[in-house]
Amino acid sequence: MILSILMKRKQELLDGMINSRNDLLTWMLAIREENQEPITRDVLIDNFIGIAIASHDTTLILLSLMMWKIARDPKIVAKICEEQMEIFLRKRRSGEEKLTWTDLQSMKYTWRVAQELMRIIPLVFGNFREAAKDLYFGGYFIPKGWKVSHGTQMNENIFENPKVFDPSRFENPSKPIFPYVYVPFGGGPHMCSGNDFARVEILTIIHHMITKFEWSQGDSR
Ligand code: HEM
Image 1 (tube, rainbow, N blue to C red):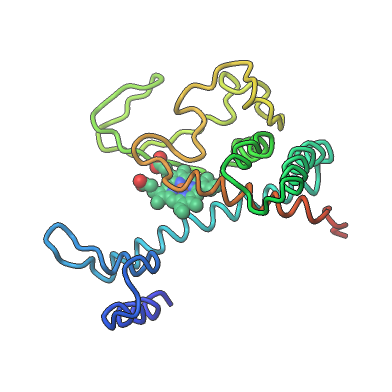
Image 2: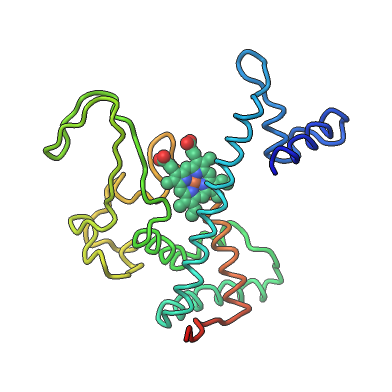
C-alpha cells in the first residue's frame, strides 16, 4: 500500500509537481544519506510504518481511553466540562474562534486525566534500553548487551494508592515524582518527539467533543 503511494510521490517530485515539504513521505524521499545516496526503499517504508504506528495508534488509544473515561465517570466529566466550558465561553465572548497555545496550556485538569490514564493503562507497555556495560541494579546482575525494561507506574513507593484513579496526583503529589519514574513518553535523548503534538491533538479533540456533545456508555446487554 505504501509502496504505491511512494512511487506516485516520487514521480510527482521528479516532475516538480510537489516539493520535499509536501508530506513526510516526500521529505524522506528527498533526504540523502551521508554518502549522498537516497534512503533505500525498504528503510524508507520501515521508517514510515514506524512513525505511523508511533504517532497514530498511541494517540488514538489515549483518545479512546479519554472518551471511555468521560462516558463512565460523572465526577471526572463534571470537572473536565467545567474547565472546557470556561475556555469555550471566554473565546465566545472575545469573538476568537481558534484554540490558541495559551488555551491548551490552561487545560490542566483535562491533561491530568490523560496523564493518569496513561499511568493506569500504559499505552506503550515496554520500553527497552540496552545495557552499555555489566552492572548491578536492585540486587540483579545485568550483563552488557542485555535489553532491559521496567514498569514503575504501579509502584506504591512512587505513587500512593497506585490502583486508585486520581488525576490530582499530578497536581499535588504526596511524594515527589522523580525523573524517569513516570515515562509514558519514554525518557532521555530518544524520548517521544511527538509528545507535545499528541497533547495538542488530544486536548483539541476533547475540547470540541465535550463542548458540543454528551455521550455515555450504552447498555452492552
Ligand atoms: C499519546 C501519544 C503518544 C505516546 C504515549 C507515545 C509514546 C512514545 C514512547 C514511549 C516512545 C519511546 C521513547 C523512548 O524510547 O524513550 C516514543 C517514541 C517516539 N514517538 Fe511517540 N508517543 C505518542 C505520540 C506520538 C506522536 C503523535 C508522534 C509523531 C507525530 C510520535 C513520534 C514518536 C517518534 C518519532 C518516536 C521515536 C523517538 C526516537 O527514537 O528518537 N509519538 N513515543
